[in-house]
Image (tube, rainbow, N blue to C red; front, side, top):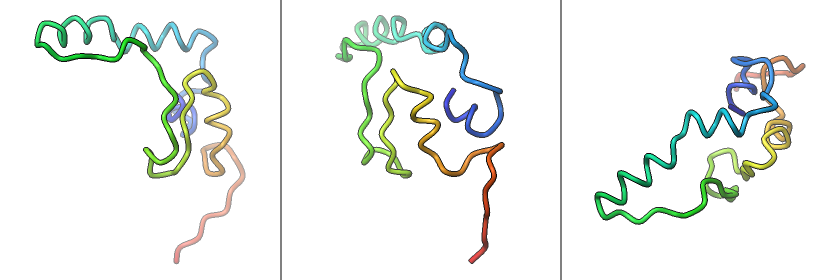
Length: 85
């Protein structure tokens, strides 16, 4: 959702974003199937992902999607200058 908001695909992050995320990413079903296959899963649904995991070197904290979105200098609907090298 943050990237969709960043690039103007959605106008804003909805107030019920966590509810919508739970509806779209069914971790309960994933855990059930993984359990049947003998695969262990983390017990928590969300975690902070460290900056070194991402190409843009930005940490992602699912409890602060707006802060994450605001951390990007380049995004749709924001004055910006782009140059070709």
